[in-house]
Image 1 (tube, rainbow, N blue to C red):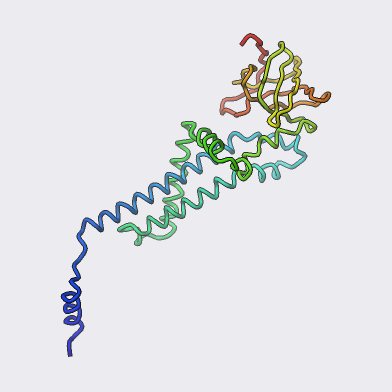
Image 2 (image 1 turned 60 degrees about the vertical axis):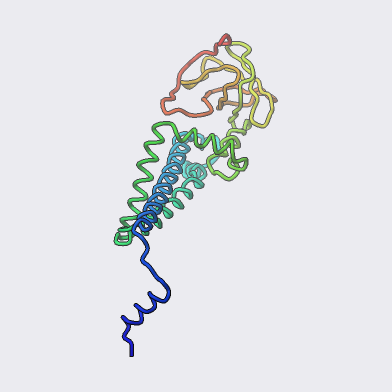
Length: 248
């Protein structure tokens, strides 16, 4: 009776089985590493945008929204980008486990490596201003983005003139105290200022600029501005008492 070794050798000869060349294993390993790095990079982009959304949020608005700070935080968390981050971290983990030495690593090590890598690279990209550019690109490319991304409903949040919140694009500047604004729903408003109005730096009151205003609805389509902020918050923005310059 043939032993096992003889049967294996005979099967190899009959079926012309040959070992795969080493370069195929190397190519497969390189491809898996490539997928791991791609997933890590995409995860870092998701974290970068989530960080931008959180940092640009107006955390003091809960007073005007008739909610608590905790409630405002819950509706402001960028859940969509956090889900993307988790998905790409998992994909990175899955691919790393299939690398040449990845199977020897403990799960917590691989997951930790994926998370730390995504957070570190995402934080670095955020300092370069990539978060804003990525979100603007996605918002312009995906029509439903603003409806499904939690923190991208900022236009709806600021479209509450009865609650003292208004935002839109400056259409024209009439004088130092008044300018016309078209809100994001298309309605035209006259915006009035006085000596107590606070404007945020950097802010330019000129046609084409998008701003958000905290104040009070005085008449139909007439809004008094207590604070005027640039639509896109910047890290160095601070309160100032700048004057409108109609000649700019």
